[in-house]
View (cartoon, rainbow, N blue to C red):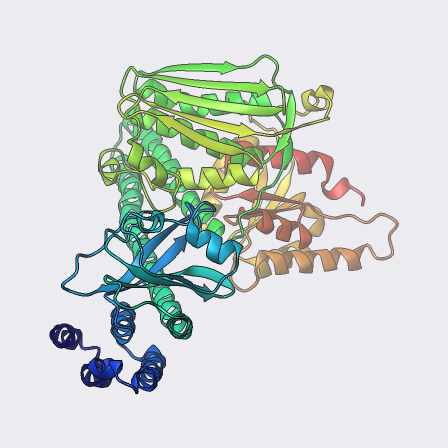
Length: 613
């Protein structure tokens, strides 16, 4: 026994857990005489010192795992046992897993097998069903059911005590001897119960340390993912910017009209690509902040799908791919959902299909309606590179791509699918993936869409705009454009050049209010930016509405000039803020000619100076 103590003491000293060093000296000098007439008194004294040491070491900076193992060692030595262990209860598979243990160096270590802790086991029946606080087993048969069940070959006697944390069984503490010279008594079990109570604090500390390490690793992993994401974004944004700047320089220095036209088309493509990247970043920021919201509207489903088809076809034609569009004949005419966000999802998945499918590949886009419950299923299948099994779990995670080599080969932000998943789930649907590496992928979106009640006649009655024939459509109309950036004023001027509309420009909100007050009857409509110096668009709108209220205070007819916000703030809350400020409508930047013409037609011919409110 003295040799064992000396060996253990040397091992213990190497761990630098000096908090128990005094007890080692006590044990080395006291264990042998424990057989005399003062044995019980000495045992209680040593046990008290052990509990004190356990309590004092809770707040030390030593590694908790080392402290727990040394505590088990001291418990075993104080009780003249060759084995002590702590096994955690795993509720998922009803097993005990040994997480901390100490064994006499001369003895064979126990296997790390899982221990059964189900309703059929002896320990479960003792502690979970009967509610006992200890189990003593003496003179065990090496072939007994208990020994085989607990995988503790070689033990001849054991004491088992449950570890209780927050009212639940965390696991089991076991003390075992390899000889049956002496038997365990109830007082030994009671001593173990007290020790188990002291061990709880160390276990809680260990749990906290483990959670802290996991949180740190997760944070570091997230930071690495975001760092890689920023690096990708730098590359992704510089690529279209390089194309825009380069093509603009070529066009500026060229007198060949066909060459200039080609450069402008490439600038347009690169600008749309850059806008998509910016939108992805803004959307992901909204999602992470919990401010991503949908704006459900009623729209024609088939018309929307044809629009998606037309948007993706030019990319498909560039790669000479085959596109099979198969909408079911029983699709509802009108549905209610966020049309733009649904388009965003479908375009994102179809774009990925085009990107990852080689030339002459096939892309299928099927849209069907299930009977019960009524769900619209969008199914996009490609014959592309497919996705490896171990990469599927990362596919819908933000700031990650399934494979870093994908970025190098195909580019992309790694945000599209994460955003798409969030959109579909907010709509009450689901998105799933089936793929075999090298054999393509199938994305399936199941979406419960409410059928719209709007009459077809109302839709057909909407005024159609022929954007190939805009000559003189706004002849005689005058608008005031409040915009502080010169190039944006030039863009509005060029977009509306063929319509023969007259435009006055204000450099900021203060200038717009001054010009309107000076000649309010001149203007049929106001286009106003939001972020401007001196006075922003919200303040300018408030001043104009106050002026109109004073102007028509004594009149039976109250007239208002239509004011349309023209801003890069395009989220739902931004649009609502514009309407709440007294504006009539909203146009997002960059301005699309089709949207601008529609909004001008709507407000110039149905409102304006002649309208009454």
